[in-house]
Amino acid sequence: MEKIIECVPNFSEGKNKTTIKAIADAIEQTSGCRLLDVDPGKSTNRTVYTFVGSPEAVVEGALNSARVAKENIDMTTQKGAHHRMGAMDVCPFIPVSNVTMEECVEISKEFGRRAADELNIPIYLYEESASLDYRKKLPQIREGQYEGLKKRICTKEWKPDFGPARFIPEWGATVTGARSFLIAYNVNLLSTPNQAHRIALNLREAGRGEDDPGKLKDVKGMGWYVDDYNLAQVTVNLNNYNITPLHVLFEEVKKEAEKLNIAVTGSEIVGIIPLDAILMAAEYYIKKENLFVLEEDQKIRLVIERLGLNSVAQFNPKEKIIEYIIAKERNEPLASLSVRQFIEEITSRSSAPGGGSASAAVAAMGAGLG
Image 1: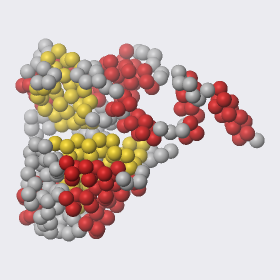
Image 2 (image 1 turned 30 degrees about the horizontal axis):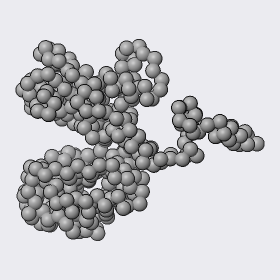
Image 3 (image 1 turned 180 degrees about the vertical axis):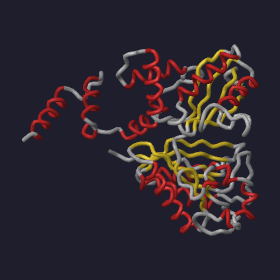
Image 4 (image 1 turned 90 degrees about the vertical axis):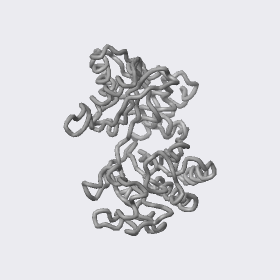
């Protein structure tokens, strides 16, 4: 089965359309890479790219995008609202399909070594790839930002994992590593932003401080008010949905809201999400409500209903679930489908495959028996 890794490089450029497009083109033109999303921000002066591919392809795509950034981004003049320390600020690799976290760690190290050697830039490893515990989290490495890097990079404690241990003014430094799939998720409340923030403080891992931690691990969050929706939200990043799944966060928000007599009116997923995270939620509600649901599309529909994912914007599985996006772009021929997928296609309402394809498949199985 095909190995798929997601790469989400963040570049410190959100205003120059020519540079933003050049980086996107570099990724798209890399053999085996599929660019899924480009999200520029003017006020943050930062653009986030999302692409997928085989292990070999994503390394090449990341390198190609870094080469373009080296030619077009100058950190000596860069200003923006978002914390940053380099032209290619951070470049995480995330396992999506048939790939282990350990493989992604090796991929991130390969990218780090090659980028440092070719571009002569400092590279730090973080998250699952981190070489030292105190350098595991991005805020730890990025403390002091670009402006503080000049002194910091020369110290023994902050020597880069790859590349020169000196300040490169035009570039800064890059952080890379393997991490779990991050889900950006908002739960809607008919409340004030202060009430939403109070709930977020109760739930996020950091809580209100070291002496008063929150309930849920690997969750970052806050409360805010969205004028376009005319409601408040608890907005969170689920850094590891295997530790705190989507449905757990939603149900905990409901419990906290009930204590304050606040109505929960659905939720929204920002960006894309892995199919596994949706199916985990489906299994929770199937078990909780003693339901009989077998088909994958029905499980997804159940989650959309229970979490209210259509409440503020349409949740289209083909555009929001990463495996579906990839499958749609591949437009795989029938011959590449598994037996189960082939049977599901036959039972669907599509005109193909039909009886001829089914007969051919049965004949092939018979021939295989000798």
